[in-house]
Image 1 (cartoon, rainbow, N blue to C red):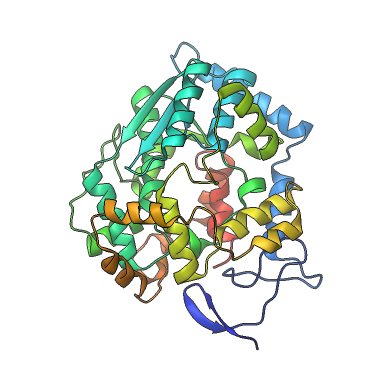
Image 2: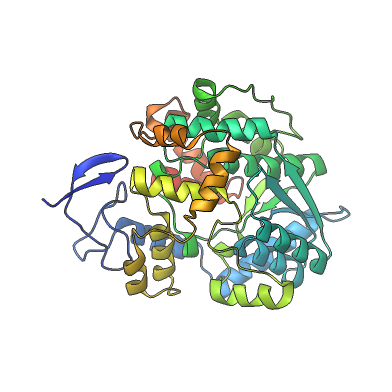
Length: 398
C-alpha cells in the first residue's frame, strides 16, 4: 500500500490508481475499474450517451420536444422557465432558446447574497439583447446565511445545498405561479459529468434536518408560488405529479461544445468569463477550499474528466491539474465570504477541524429514494424530474 489519503473525509491507506481513459482516480468514492483500467464513470458516460444522442437523432428529438412545448404554451406569455446565473452554460442556453429554438422563456435568477458582479452584468446584457424578462428571486438573507453555517457545522461536503435547493424551488415556484409547464436546465453530463453521491447529495428533507440541528433561524413555510428553501419529497411530488411541471435538459441532445458556446455568447451577448465554472457564485471560492483541504474532493477533476470523455479537453492537461489548488481559491474572496457569514476566521477554522461526515450521518430521505427506484426512473424519462436524477442516486458511486 502507498501513503495515506483522505477518501470521503476518512483517512485510508492508498495506492494511486487512475482511469486509463479519463483523469479520475481512486480518491473518488465508489470508483471501480474494469480489466482495461477504465472507470465506472466512463461506462456511465457511454450508457448516457447512448440514451441521449447529440447527433441528428438528438436534434430531431429537440425539435419534437420544442414543438410540444410551444403547443402547450400557446396563448400564454411564456412557454418555459429557464434558470440563469450569468455563467457560460445558462447564458448559452438562453441564447439558443431564443435565437435558434424559438421559445418564449421567462428567465429566473436566484440570489442568496453571493452573486459574482461579473455574472450579474452578463445576465443584464443577455436579457437586454435577447429582449426577454428576468425575474430575480432574492432569498431571506438570515435563512441563506444560517443554512450555509449549518452545513459548515454539520461537516459534510454539501456546502452549496441551500443554494441548489433555492434555485430549484425558485424555478418550480415561478413555473407554478405563471402556470408554465416546462423548466429548461442548462446542464450536460458531457461537460460536467455526474458527481459521486457523497460529494453532492440533493435532498430537501436533509437540508431541513441539518438546519434544525445546527441552525438558529426558523425557516419560512412552503407556499406553492413561493416555496423558499422547501423542496423535499412532498413538495416535488406536488409540482411534478400533481401539477405536471416537467424539467428538460436540452444540452443532453445538443452537440454542446463549451469553447464554441463561449465564442458565440462573447460575440453576440458581450459575455465576460466569470473566472471559472460555477464562479457566478462567489461562495464557490470557499467551497473549493474546504473541499480540497478537508475532504480531498476535486470537483474540477470530475468535470475535466467529462470534457476528456467528450473530446473537449486533452487528457494530459486534465491529469496535470488534478488535485491542484484551483484558481478561484482566492484568499480575498474567502475572507469576504467568512465576513459575510458573520463569523471569525478562528470559528471558520474550528469548523474545518471537525470530523468529516457525509449525508449518511444525518436524517435524510435516502431510504425512501432507494425504495422508489422504479418511479424515479420513470419520472426521469418522462421529464418530470431532471434526467440525471436516476443515475445520480443509483449508478454513481457511494
